[in-house]
Amino acid sequence: MLRIAAALAAGLLSLSAYADPRAEVLAAYEKMLNGPPYQSDMTVVAGGRTSKTTVIIDLPDRFHIKNEGGEFILTPEGNWMKPAGSAQWMQPPMDLSAMKQPFSPELVEKGMAAIANVEALGTERVGSADTKVYRYTQDLEVMGVRSESTSTVYVDQATGLPVRFASKGKAMGVESDTTQDLRYDEGLAVKAPN
Image 1 (tube, one colour):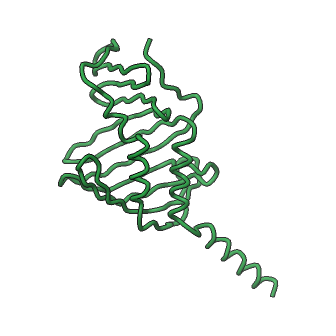
Image 2 (cartoon, rainbow, N blue to C red):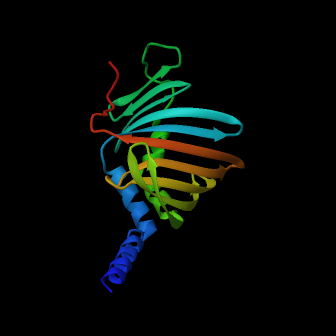
Image 3 (tube, one colour):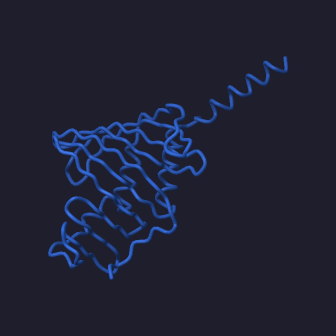
């Protein structure tokens, strides 16, 4: 009888680990938005092209973006760019504030509200992290552009922070596959270039 009770308790505990998958995904994203600075290594495959971008994100308003076009630093003190192949930082000739827009409180709230159909998929090891894996859909319109996606997020069980994000989506008729690996570090800081 004791074994049956123990087996039932273990089963209930495993079920309660995913009692509300949507709430767990939202909690992970909230923790990320309010947590330490992080680095996102992102690969996007869209329209027959692959692009890689590394972004250091120090919320609420500091970003260091590196891609094949160069580097960009965005802070409240100013914006700078270093074109690919250049050794010099310079003030950009155009307004870069739109690069911060995905992190505006309004768009973050809208994106989180659009998370739907959340499923808990189980656990998986990602790098050195034991993660809980979730899949969800989003149907979202931003600046007049509608996008639909199915995403998988891998949440580190020890920290509660997302460590990997993968998404297949479609916007303006173009399909894309996006993968991000995330690393959190209080030592990551975005400062104006010297």
